[in-house]
Image (cartoon, rainbow, N blue to C red; front, side, top):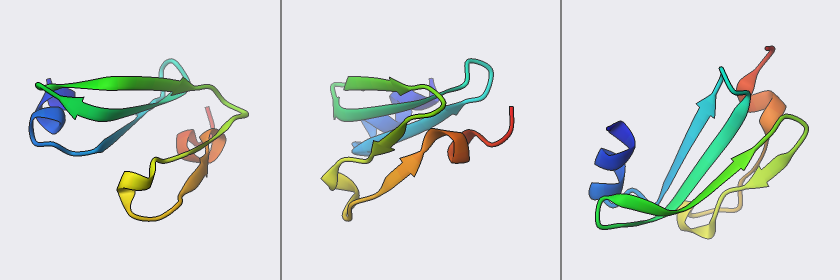
Length: 68
């Protein structure tokens, strides 16, 4: 429900740290109340947020999730 609210509000990027499944989910391209693009990143990976955040930002999944 919260993700849908972000998409409806037009927030360009939604990042979710899934501690239970040990994944970072990056949702982009909001349209009609949902995100069109969803990428899940496992531990050991890095990911770069899209340019729509305003600056190049690369994060490591392990640092986002913390010790598990």
